[in-house]
Length: 199
Ligand code: SF4
Image (cartoon, rainbow, N blue to C red; front, top):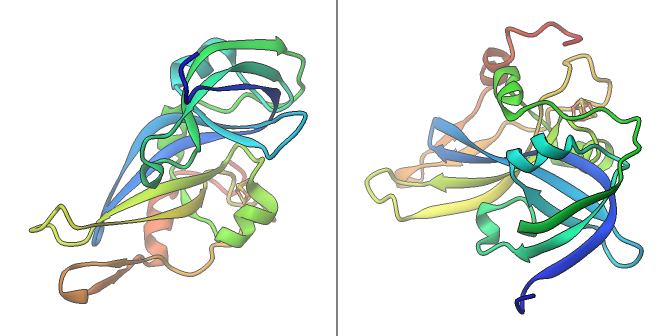
């Protein structure tokens, strides 16, 4: 085992999509990286581990399953919503679980997200398969693309009728010459207009 490899052995308490959001003033695009597992071990704080979509397809992971393996710390924490990734030696040693299997990344993409208040995410959504905390990379000036800012934003891909849902404030994106783009509510409405209230 190499020096910075971290073994894990515990129960999955959350599985959500692992998606990175890029912003450049009023433009935005997503990278679908895989899934984010929260793994609760016998001792210590829960581990946030990124896995590939291929691993998820193979094991059909869901909350309640017990798993083990090894992972490595992420190289650039600004670009990741998890603390570890590059999982090797992955094993499922307790597969019994009544919980649903999260959908494919393509399904999340088709559903589209709505912004979700960070506080609501922390209090009600961290173990919901529709929640997502994205690492966000912002190109401040498209003529100087090396100037970037980083933050996280939280989103909901779930049914619009969920009683927990709170949008929180509109997101603001700084551009060149200190201009600020405010992402209005119609963006979320447009991204999810093909879904009914309970879908
Ligand atoms: S608002 Fe509801 S559906 Fe959306 S992530 Fe939170 S609990 Fe899940």
